Length: 96
Image 1 (cartoon, rainbow, N blue to C red):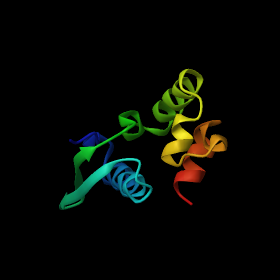
Image 2: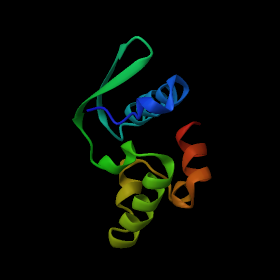
Image 3: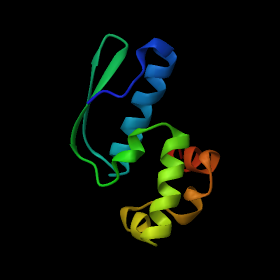
Image 4: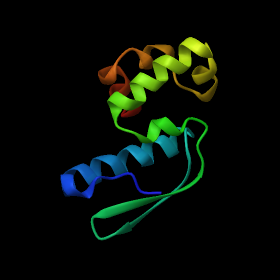
């Protein structure tokens, strides 16, 4: 699976790949990342919340909606409630 818009350049590709590594480290997705030059490909095995692979705005919107329908489900995956507030808190939590 590849969800990097390579037209946005190498910096964006690196940022997305870093996010994939963070999601894997936090066990929010299961898979590996491989590289071909500067560009990464995610080899996805399992994603209990696949919307997390989107950008921060997309992930935040889906996280909020999911939390309304299934309260506490994301917390069971290890996502603290405060990380669902907005893009900035999501990004800050993911990158800490």
